Length: 362
Image (cartoon, rainbow, N blue to C red):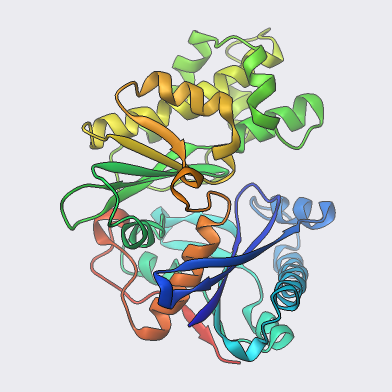
């Protein structure tokens, strides 16, 4: 029952590949990280908004993405001395380039047919579309996985994933699992430091820590209607992007760049804290995964805003913060092949439970 999970998130920094043993309650065995080449990253980023010759450009970009993922798969199998025939399936999220559930569509590219050809392994992909077709948001998809993985941990608790965007899974004593996207995770902080300092990201939140939160700017950003809506809800670069930030900054001129970064970090922290307080006020622990789990400045802000909760990386309870999402897509592939519904209507708003994914046999 060996599966591979492949996740390429909205931060576009690289491709995460996790080798998982489903028989052992989804045990993470090994992993491989493949950095995203700058040219491909820029092309994928440009495909997130309208442009010329999109169909041709998207087709070429997804071929490059699949080739990169296949290289990572082969390297991981070589390092672990496992053959392709021992892997039941690859669960590939692909790369999201558009997410518009209000218009009943979501688009992830990743050429699964090519990935199957290059690896010789069955590929399961396109996990979001069926949920969207059933009236759901198609995101987040990880709460069902979190419920399975954390069912024996103390509750009530929240599993917080901070990637380009942040999403939470709320677990309590009841069977029903809740979760939704909170808003920006690293996406605005990354965009601003790239714009201001030509750096890929704010390492450990160090630049934000040098600044001071600008309260008028923060108040304006928190007026974005998305923050006031209740779940089910999901979001992406279609809403929160550099242009969104610059439009708001035009209303607040002459703010030092490091103060903007500090305010963006506070925006991420406050939107997460408010989401937890409003939907599960008795939360006792917040377990953090994703790239944001390494941002100590951000975690410190969350601890200040959630004084009655413990806030820590999932690494502290022996669940890898870096590989959680890739593991989730390995599990989603397993659910698809076994005919197990993996969406949660209370999370996505779908009209019912659905088996998610499309299968490309080896």
